[in-house]
Length: 291
Image (cartoon, rainbow, N blue to C red; front, side, top):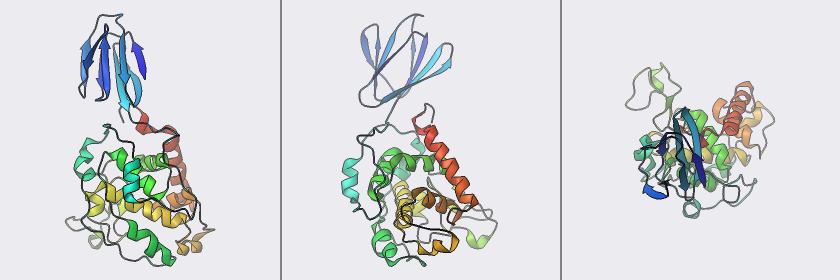
């Protein structure tokens, strides 16, 4: 993909672009500033990713190569009862890219659990504990977006919806801490009041999800893997206890997203959360320069 600009100063933020000035190609570092004569034409080519351009000032434009999914290759939500692909199958399907908007996630992105032990859930169809939770491994490494793709593939969910929820929960930051409490009995090991109870990119609440801490804080893949496992169990209709709070039914992906937030089925808090995440999906912040 190519674009042109005639502004005097150009900032290129990309490792996947090639900069051509007056017909000569030059390698582009992670951030490059190039002085040009006013009226010069600059072509920037992204070999495989999408090129984004944003005006910073009258003399400054920022150009970025970004990994953006296309409808022909992106992961979509699979119907209730679908056979879900394995860890390794999804790892082979991830569209690899050097794009990493959250370099601070690097350590967590390359932390794989040596083992996972999730206690059985109560109030659920037995298949939740026998077919869903045993699949949680966190066994993948990559960029933040690659991990999102992998987990979306593994659990059969629309990858852009996963991206949008992650925007709302943490802006894709594994360092995000939330749901603070002054109750010392609810503090995770190593924390003191006021202490967070929710951790990581998808804000896994350790007081509601036993067995998730400290992996939910240490491993991006585990954090997203577990979150989407819980969503798939809900989506399959296995969270039977939710029937106490409304017309719970299988196949309502957004209802399950709201349940993750409020703990109830389409209550006011859940529906408000759903509306905000749908707005995030429409905004597609992850595809915008500066994300």
